[in-house]
Image 1 (cartoon, rainbow, N blue to C red):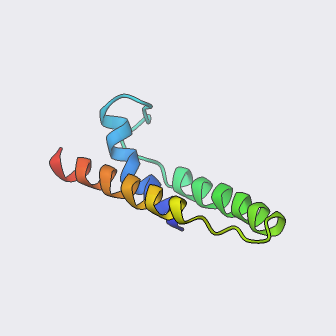
Image 2 (tube, rainbow, N blue to C red):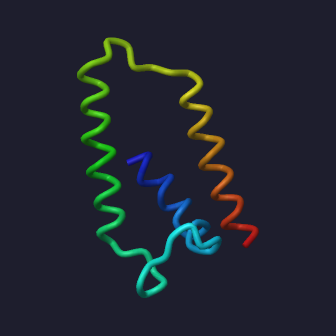
Length: 76
C-alpha cells in the first residue's frame, strides 16, 4: 500500500514531464491495481527470504521520494 501511495504521488508528475503517457490523459485504475499486486508479491518474496528485512535508510528514501513528488504536485 505504501508503494501504491508513492505511485499516486508520482503519476501526475511523470505524465506532465512526458515520462510516459496514458490514452485518455488519466491514469487507469488497472495501473494502481497492478502496482499494488506487483509490490505485494515482491514484498512477500523479500520478507520470506530475509531474516531481518528492516532497513533504516529505506524508510528515509521512501519518505524523501514521497515528499518530493507530493511537493511537485502541489507546486505544479
